[in-house]
Image 1 (spheres, rainbow, N blue to C red):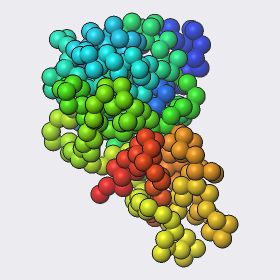
Image 2: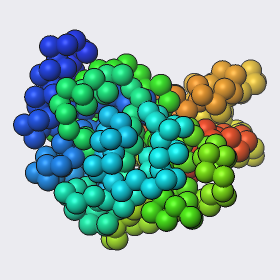
Image 3: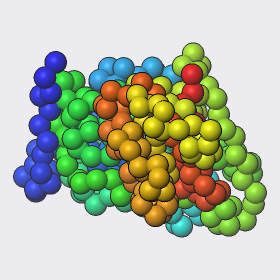
Length: 331
């Protein structure tokens, strides 16, 4: 089916028009600093239901609510002292907090749980849109459920262009992987649910306490406390195999139907039509920014299999990249 969604330049007139779409219960794909999201009025159950239909998303997978600041966050979630400290340090930014929800938040947004995931985005266009529409916006990634997240407006149109009508172009996503998610339902026992650009060590330093990391492996049969926790997610259609280091025992020249994605530019002896690099130098910021776009490119290349090298080290972005790759490779 041909794509019909219109991509809007970020003019004042277009922002006013798109704010009107959201106020009337419609959907708008929006840029964030992490990935593009599919936004709707978070307090309008009918509007949020359109998100689930457009994405083919199960209702057991909750939505992150994006708000303009701490005051609006307090109308969505019950803010404890730990949340306020983290908000002062990291909001606006790529940190999602799971907290007890306030009355009035639709069950559909929270997968029926008494908690809600909330964050304050830093992307200037999304902040202008939030200010114009005056509503909190539920906004999961703007892609068919389970597929690679979109980091440009054209990625959104390629995946959802026949299901939605409006995409706000904010340029390529600056970070490229989804937000860090911290479970603060019990502030005495904070749990990292999903790694992102903000590290567990940075969060622990602000809170002054240890943060556990629970690598959730869930299915769609039961409600999750936050999105991005399914065992298989962020996945290309082409089978993907992970490697700590490429090529290992493999020889790209001997497997011409498979693509090989090195983390950094491989030696000249390995150059070939099926050999690719995520970065030239191994820079993690660049790798995260390019990850989903590069996987989309390879997924469209007609390869029989993708061999992908994981990111080295234990930094926040390395953990985030490898978390997404592990879910992309899950059976």
